[in-house]
Length: 360
Image (cartoon, rainbow, N blue to C red; front, side, top):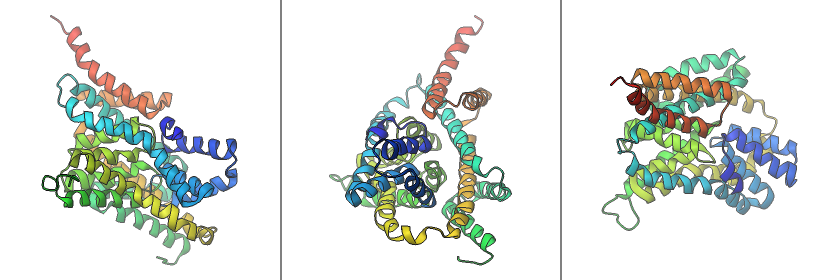
C-alpha cells in the first residue's frame, strides 16, 4: 500500500521501488529471481507493475499473499481516482476551469508520447520493430476495434519469422441501471486487461474504441481526462477504468470497471502462471513473441494517440502548448504528474495572460 501511494513515475519507477523493497531491503526474493519473474510478467497481458505485485505476494505467502499485495497496491490510486471521478461532473462544466482541463488533456498527450518513446528505446535499433509500428499505427486509425487481434498477430508473426515454422446497472436500483450495462463495462475492461502487454498505456486503444466509439459512454475529451487522472494518481494508469465506469454507471459502474480490469491479472498470475512457470522457462518462442507483440502495442498506442490528438489540438494556441510541454518533458525528464499539472496551469493561465496584455 505504501508503494501504491508513492508510486509516481510510471510502471518502471514503481517496479524499481518494488525491487528495492522486496529484494534489497527485506530479502524476500533474490535479485535474479525478481528479474526472471519480471521478464515473464512482461510476456503476459496486464499492467506490469500490478502483475509484479501479485507475483511478489504469491512468492512470499501464496495466493492469499498475492491477492493482498495486488489489492493493497491499487487501493491508494483507487481512492484518489474515485474522488476525482465524483468531482469531475461538478468542475468540468465550469467555464473558468475549462482552459485548465484542456491544458491537462494536452499534458496527458505529451505524457503518452513520452512513454511511447521510452517504450521504444529497446527496439529502436531493430528494423522489424519499425516495420511493426509503421504497419500497426495506420491499422489502428482504420480498424481500432481489431486492436487485440493486431497485437496477437504481431507476436505470432515474429514466432513464424524467427523459427521458420508456424506454432501458431446499480445494486439497489436495477430499474434505473440495467444489469446489461454493468456486464458490458466488466467485459470491456476484462478484454482490455487480457490484451495490455508491456505497459498500462496499452489500454488506450483497447478502451478508446469500445468506450467512445462503440458504446458512446464517454466523449474523446472525457476519455482523455480519465487517462490524465490515471497518470496524476499513483499506481498503474489502468486505474482509469474506475473513472470510465463511474462516468458510465456511477459507483457500481466504477466497481465493474475495476474488477473487469484487474481480474485477469489475478487469474493469470495466481493460478495459471505458477503451473506454467517452470515449463515455460528457456523457450525461445517466448522471446520471439515479445519481439513482435511489444512493437505492435507501441504502434497501436501511437495510432490511438493520433486519434485523440486530432480531437484535442484544434487551435494554434494548443499546438504551441503541445510543443512547449513536449520540449519540457524531453529536456527535464519531469514526472508524468508534473507535466500534466504544468499543462493544466499553462492552459488555464494563458487566456488570463492574453487578456491582461491585450491593448485597451
